[in-house]
View 1 (tube, rainbow, N blue to C red):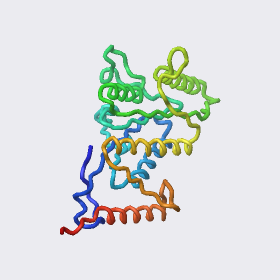
View 2 (cartoon, one colour; view 1 turned 90 degrees about the vertical axis):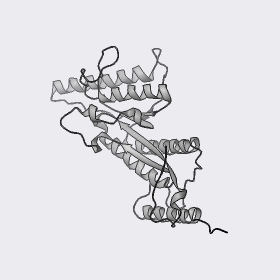
View 3 (cartoon, rainbow, N blue to C red; view 1 turned 120 degrees about the vertical axis):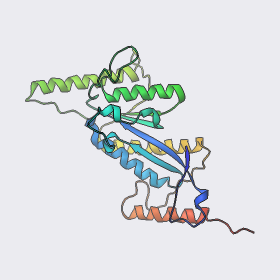
View 4 (cartoon, one colour; view 1 turned 120 degrees about the horizontal axis):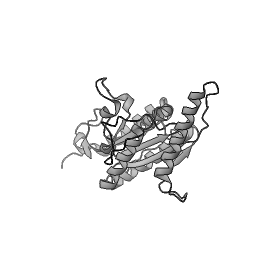
Length: 252
């Protein structure tokens, strides 16, 4: 969706020339990958700067939303079918089962977790109207099991088995071949590298599909992932670009 946006620092009169492609990214995962959720948000914010003037990115994470104590978590979380991209991150847990009286499949069965519910919702949305697109990431780092608490250890093993069952159900065929694509990573920095490459390419594809010329601004010493003084340099360079390319020409 294209939407107008203000740019107070751009040359007067250039405002009418700017339209942004609005893209909503939904990050879905259990709570054991908090570091990766934070990284996904940070990368999206960096790419917002990188593609400034072309896209408006909204990254949805449930923990940054207002959730009232008068209803369940899932009932108040954004419907994932309203997103343009659904990012799924799994490691050692699938999550907590949803209440059957509120969330059930047409056959009456329940969902093992909000993540499972969101994945199936996203998949149905894509099958119906090609949205949202879906990227999946599986963390492969070793999980530390409790050696003192037998019940806790058994619960951890059961949760690991649930993750394996989820992956087998949605990403592998009965003969062991791959049914759908997903990405493995071991450590958070590896996830950061992956997600930045993938999101950048996805944004470019969406801009091309919307017939918006991709004008990715780069300069020699800053690279990607602007921080500190580099972020200020990126800001100045992009504002200069707007002044040069969007400043209205005098009427003849």
